[in-house]
Picture 1: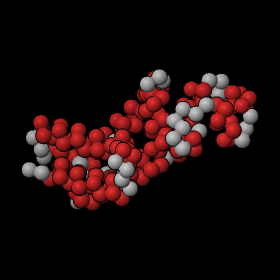
Picture 2 (picture 1 turned 135 degrees about the vertical axis):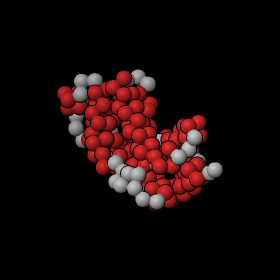
Picture 3 (picture 1 turned 60 degrees about the vertical axis):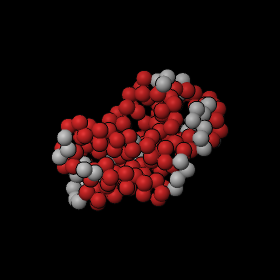
Picture 4 (picture 1 turned 45 degrees about the vertical axis):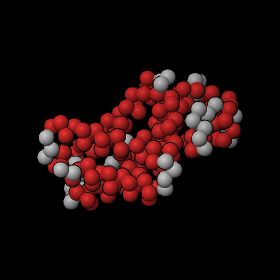
Length: 175
């Protein structure tokens, strides 16, 4: 299923999953009586496999430019690994409360990471500016933000990372 997501088939049918997996359709339905159950299981397994890329070692540690570099590199790597699955999850979330909740937990986790990583700079700002800067950084660094640069702007991973680093530096250092 995840391979089909990567091929931009964001709503694969059980028949397609069976064919790709080399098993019978009956076998798929034996373990997943509903297509939604198959989707939930595939997404949960993928999240489990990429768990280390959701983590940010040394969160909040080091000089600002180093922290920006590490966070952008980690988000870019996370996006490259789960971007297709995230697109499928976003699509499925409209119809499935379980996937919607899982998707939202992922967003919240990334938001909390940004706030902790840049806490020294954010807490030094006046409250109204702090909220605006924090929200802008969050939008840029959510998987959707990275996807905007990679898919819609058609930038390479290196180009997107460069733009994100420069934007973050501007947001966090502008007077």
